[in-house]
Image (cartoon, rainbow over all chains, first blue to last red; front, side, top):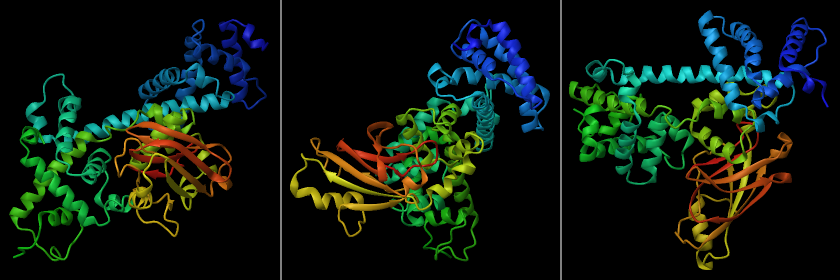
Length: 229
Length: 235
């Protein structure tokens, strides 16, 4: 049996720190202690996760600081915490068994931080789009404690609006076009380029889009939505 | 002054696409107002649904690291066909150095798959040739074999032209050029309504066969770990 499996969490954490220090000095080091501590954390054994956080949160902060020098200390701290939280969420025992070596695990951990950044960027971009597109309504409707996104882009409005679109599609081509235009944000030029079999000519895209919007405007089901849209 | 200008031509003009009727057109205030109104609705629809169908970054991460099941990977690859934003994020999340070793664009360029859709045993004999030709569009010299390239992302594999509930199909194919580029196993799947209805390993020389595929509209999606290798046909 691997020696590290017999050690207590505390001793493992000490040895892991020592080996990390050797690694930082580019000296020969042994990754088994850190790997075992991480394994115990993933398998939810004996509170090992707290020790992993204690060791790897400062390490992540240094990594992220080098990677994104523009981030302030508070953001770096939040980001490293979020990366660890996501790491523990994503890495199930099954996933853990597919990891090979400490450098692989730590590279994945850093990418968990990247997912947190991506989620943050998506939220910001979405909010910015909503603010621009619905500027008028938002100035009238915004209530205390309600975010911009919650007041406009809630699931119910999305669902009703998509139903309005769906019921006015005359054929699968209209539906595909609506998906590409509004769900995937593609431009007519790109649609013609990538979906030439469905839309051989750019004029077809514009005609379909205009006709679809005109039908939606005439549809009594959609009329209320159009006061918002 | 320009009586023949259609509304859609003004929409196109707003995007910088000029038609013979709008060449040299100077917009009147009414036209400007109409265009702005349409553009506002378009902008609001886009904002409302912006990336509402995109998978969580966790899914993209595990796709990039080849940690999803084959079925999950194929569904995600199907989404990536239509979503350049997610494709960009997958690239960000891929293991460092992977993109240099396995360049997605270079890998994709020139990758081709030859698909043959053969009608299942319950299909009425008389409908076979015409139906398959209609279903798959332009064919080459073999009426049941079509060569797709990865640039042709809009092609459909439709085997439901006849709405025959008893029909099943066999889809055979060969991914050309895969073996030289990729040593690991690849899979091909048929996806319908975000559900994998048939899948198979791609064997040596890129050959695959999907059996007992029921009659429906399909997206055919080729997936090989870990990313950016998929041949798409949106249904």
